[in-house]
Length: 149
Image (cartoon, rainbow, N blue to C red):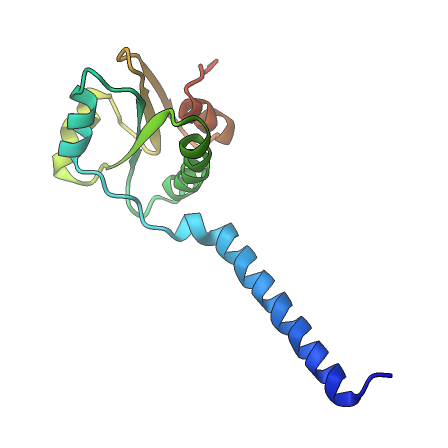
């Protein structure tokens, strides 16, 4: 038979557990959207692109701060990047802020005129490019596939 005090303890533990599950689920669901963009300077990106002995492809994600579509793409990229980094080790990721003057040469080099744009440069300097928010196409670029447009 339940003693009133034990029932209250059980209800409290259950409530706390459910609350913790809710908090964790919320962090997972919203976490990537709220994270700031990793910062890569134009100098670092240019250095990585110029290395002839690169062992990995380079994926550049061109974004503009405050762009809602860019935030959604960032979330997709970061979750896809997690799988790529820990499973295939196939690509280095660089985020390029299109508002920064120092990045204008990269915009010109890759003919970026709108955001979000993903550019994948493979080891042979072949370029795969996609502008938009289609999750399937973003994952194709991230994983080094081919786009059928």
